[in-house]
Length: 257
Ligand code: PGA
Image (cartoon, rainbow, N blue to C red; front, side, top):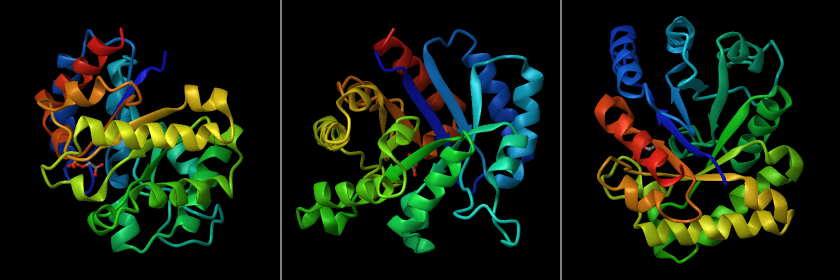
């Protein structure tokens, strides 16, 4: 059975004080959490700070993820973040290909593939985001867009390597809008992604975790997480609220015991 994976994408939110308060509340709320991988992804300047809180907690409940990684592992690259730096700060995961970066920074499928390659090479787990825009959905090309995004990565890394990644299906129209995909919509895209992977390797398709993101909260998480091909969530806004995020983690725990 695939283990549930719940990640909080804090985006460009927060401060040291907020990070400290949020984590302290999460440790209180999640003391009983089992069988769920729970990850928080703060903005880069806070990685070291959050990492030190995680270390000093002496608990395994919460792991650390980053929101970005360099596409080329060369030191002469101003402003970028190397995998070794992420490793030193205790990050095991990194979000790659988020639609905000694809849109606002024009990150291409090719660049995303390069980043996934760099992360996997360094032993980090990429949380690879894919998803169609509202226009693409309206034009009926959502499945094709997601296939293109995934296949671009598989042009750069082999399926065996990709098996260590987590794939996040995030329909762009659902992110930060309060308008989540319905459980049926999400399930059908997740099944599509699993089938695409099965074209490369059936065993890996069964094992790889495919999580959903886009306006997930504690009120809609149950129905989404009950879908057979949804193995967790990438949570944005609700991950900044300790009660909501812990409730989502507990819902995940209750569904796959
Ligand atoms: P949201 O963001 O939960 O606020 O919609 C999700 C994401 O961008 O990863």
